[in-house]
Length: 322
Image (cartoon, rainbow, N blue to C red; front, top):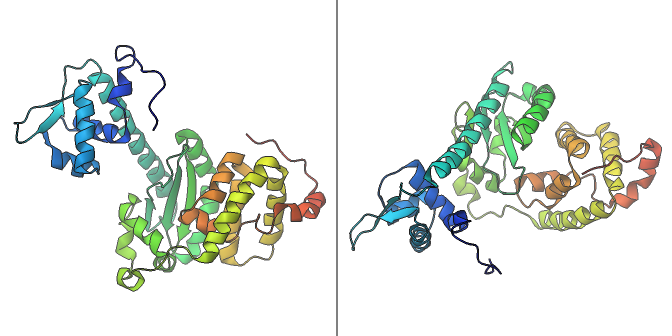
């Protein structure tokens, strides 16, 4: 980040220095939530930082008066400096952060526990994109006969949850076979899954790491589709009616799609009907597993302008989107 043009007063804006960087926030979160004296190496490990990076974050915190070194000259031990006037507010801020995650988990758990039969397992993958609202990949492990029913049963509940918690839910019902056929990159993501219901998903995986070691998560075809996705995101920005043509294509394609393709197309239909232009652009440009999967059945591939005739048959006036 470039140096700010104007320096802010530490009297009026002390949080500018205290929350200076992501590393500063990570270190401060640990100091607030666990008010003990931390060795630098342990603080670095728990915060997921390098030791040099932790030293810089700690120096910033000490300079801002929010932390203090209570160790010896040979062995630093860092703790929260409770005399700082903003400690109560920072404590409340991090408590609110933790509370939001707990509310999310409880809300999702209650939603899935109402299903009959109850799914075998439900988990949320760690979001790869920090842009808000967060897109949460929620995977549901169920029997083959229940996989197609789950999305329809939860359609209204998902819409309510998205509105209440300000998130985007990417629901992915799957069988054990689907789980074991996931791409290596998707299986790697399971290690950090947040469990909502049932056992951890890795409990259902067959041995695969050695078999797939060194395999590439994206083929040349995936890369080509990603490039097209970036181009199409600019097209729909200039011409929002392309979204209506794409939706028209989905409706026609669903009439003859296979079971697997139909699941993907129904997800596209939900995205096109409820998503803003910005949200749809994010899907088209998403380099992660979700974007890679959806681009395989993209209703835009081949050029949105080629579907004008289908749009004219349907005849609806394009709705305004934010």
